[in-house]
Length: 125
Image 1 (cartoon, rainbow, N blue to C red):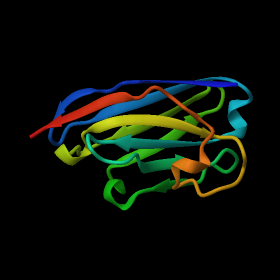
Image 2: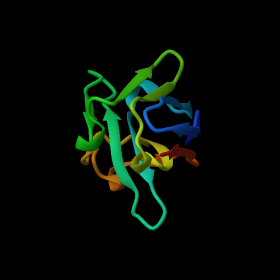
Image 3: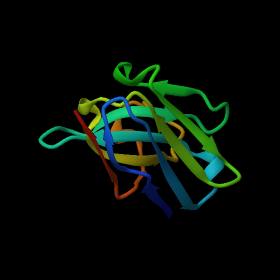
């Protein structure tokens, strides 16, 4: 079993920054791929970023490239999402997720086995 707990959400003005953190407990964290997704009201949960467990290769949705950065600390069992130059359209509940199966597209929510409870990010215009 894996438990994921997000933190760091909040209210920020356009152009501001936030850093989300996801703390993992349970099985060997360093062996999971980790992802961040977001869900705005009335919309489906959407991929934001992911990082592999071994080489630390990163993936981003086009709309956040150059603004967001995903990183992980396997010693601390955490994965962070640094979000800069935030825009109102980034407003959503952000979820971290763990992929333990070493398969599936990291861009797809269906590939993830465990999810956190989510943290709200609101960007005011």
